Length: 490
Image (tube, rainbow, N blue to C red; front, side):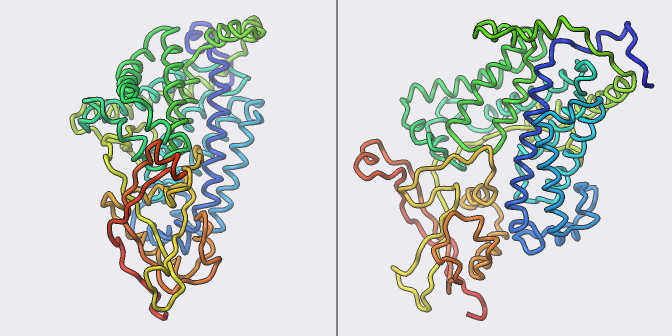
């Protein structure tokens, strides 16, 4: 089992993806570290023992098969902190290359640990972890676990698995758009999207005010990159490398114009992982850099352990079987977006923005210290990422994920919001952990007498309005979304 690979199985490995393996491992190591860091800062007030959706109550009413998780055996905030710190440290160790310096099974064990710990978080995360990039991080982490270390050649079958994931990610997003909303078919989607997306970024206002013809070009480019280019991934090189470069460019534009957590960054890492060493050598020559790839190829290739071959082969076979339902989902008229077909999230369906909202309605939260508040006694709580005061420029927060802010975007769309009632109660209690999720507490830790939620309509200022007022937004009060509420003893 520990012998080297026979010559007749030489096709199983590839000497063309050493750079890709490095980028995939270190890139997803960084994203795991970031995701666990976010759990350290946000999980307890959102989902902890006294959170808005407490994990113990969720576990009590659901079953293991609904979502395997370490926390189904036991949950405590202390255990969550230990898990999150473990994830941060392991992810950081991959970024600096420590596991990759050992035998092939060392990075495998590290990534499998990261996968299991993060799956444990996601499977009890409920509404606050119900996003496609959570599943993407789980699936990608599992694939990267079987790329091996520098002690063995890159297994080509796992590069194919990375291509298959990238194919589903891009084509799934393209198909759900084409099927889901006429705005994508009549090329008007980007007339709205930059303004109505969940968390605009600092350049979203500028993107929105680009010429109409540019928005048409954006939509056409989206369709080409998501419906046509993914098919290049299954053709001989250099076409997969060309596809990877296209995905990097298109995802880079999304990074500049919005805040989509680590979705775009994970896609960029996957796209870099389908580019072969020859393309990197060509790019290095174009930039006048030393040809490190040629020097590496001149060195003797490391032997491959037969045990490594058997492990990766077994994993590839499981992934092949599990790919049937996601493949059928792509051709289905009832295509599911961001769906898992088994509880371990090994091979999944993806998609984004199957519908585009035309208007931006926002829930703002206000409170007062007055016992009998008048119209001028209410002051606004500010969130870290979502639009609030009209004069505040949308911040850059991605690849960090502000979970509370994202869920606030869904409230005006009619999504269930039992957690929001608890959130208002936490504000009335001036709960320190909850207040730390916000950008600004207008009461500096004091308990307000009353809080309420107000529905506003937002739109970007025009360039002329921006010059005149300095504001980024114009907002109009529509109605009370939640009537004033107090604690029972106040």
